[in-house]
Image (cartoon, rainbow, N blue to C red; front, top):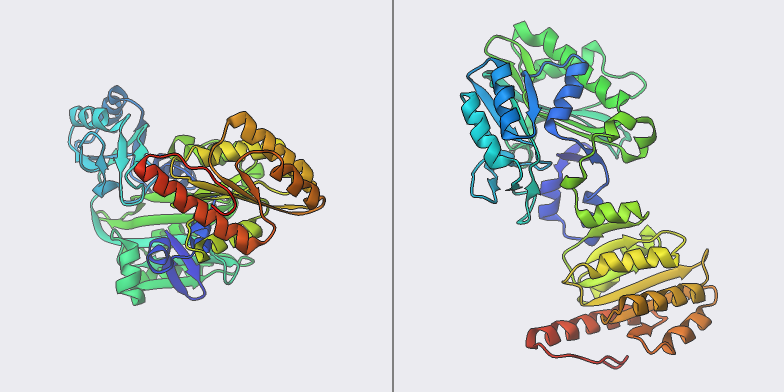
Length: 443
């Protein structure tokens, strides 16, 4: 998937490989809705975009029936998992390849039985993999030429762009890195849209044959129409193919949509598959929390996205690593704090917790009391460093210090971050040698 910065296209994969800041890590995990390929195909078909005939199946028996209904002995079965690299992935039962060529309904049934209900592990899923609940079976079309085409939002120009390449059907991130001149980027004036002239220029530069120019031009305009009318953030077709019989077809489709448009895209958002998302992040959203898991071991509970970023940065500067991004919002109510602690402590890697709250809307003493109640109720033994700034902070400091719990109130941000890292290191050492440990501010 592409992210664009100024005139040069940059992929999330490339950015992850070249940048390591916490800000980048969080920015990459935007909450934009992604939908399964079969749903993307159905949506594009409804706009008249050419696609191979196909249907979804949720069981081996359904897969066999779908394959029969296609009336074709040359088909492809695709695991419906929201992750890239499916073709090179491996299922947890040992089956290799989430995209397979099949030649009969019997093969469709056989492969579906091995895919559905299993987890597919790809370069994007990590070792945990993603659960495959369905498969998409479609006709296998033969391409004379393959192209890459995507409609995206460019943050720099605050307008849509069309990104295209004559080297479709390949790892587009590798193309962008090794042969950037093969990438064609066309900014689109949102007030004008994709005119015939713009579409014709893109098609010509890509190299479609003369017989396909009009259909390819029409396809680009239809894709842009979907992008605008459905509040999409990404429409990626790889490959967009010119078939052996000179038809223009989208052989694969990845669509993403702006979460801020959910109120007017009810149907699209009804297609969300939460089984493809991190369970903790889904739970956090239900409680109105902004939560993203990270790789570290210091849990963070903060109110305000900017303060959360600063908190993670100062943990890193002191030699620690944040276990999460967690913004409880402006209220920081006891209920929100409890939900936040449940999410943080569900991660076994967490060895210390840093609470950094600005008490503006809610008083610091109320936050402190809520924090104390939650720790007592949950019986938490993980050391907690609390930095509460704002209204009634002195009373909050007193409440925490008199609680007798493993909560340490520290007013200075640097000192609080430093102590969180120290506590984390001590807990990790204690776990390694399997001994208990008691904490004081002096460790």
